[in-house]
Amino acid sequence: MQGLGISESQFEVIRVPGCGDMVTTISDGVLSRFSIVVCVGFILQGVTDHAQYTSIKVTHGLMERFRRINRPFIDGIFHCRNAQQIQDKTTGEAAKSLAISILLVMAQDSTLRSE
Image (cartoon, rainbow, N blue to C red; front, side, top):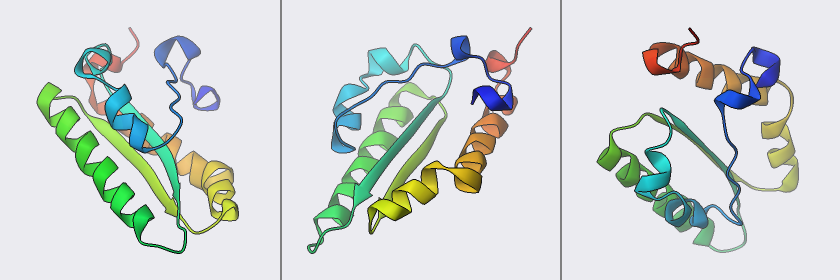
């Protein structure tokens, strides 16, 4: 983000142990502090369908939270088959594309524009 002109004072990183923890960690009180929230997480596919159910549960949980407080958010929950796919999503063009998406949403929100 800093390489794209967003200073460290304009964002905060909140880390959680797993994607499922995003929904419970970001309470309405936490969300109300921000104009926009970007959720980035990775779900690794195992041999069962559990990853798909987790992905659906997390996405629906996040959507419900954000709908209640009426805030824009970017859902960056990635369902990956292996560690290489995670690396591909977090480096190079894929990471730049996610950052640009964030900037585009921020540009549309007048409360986030620098004075």
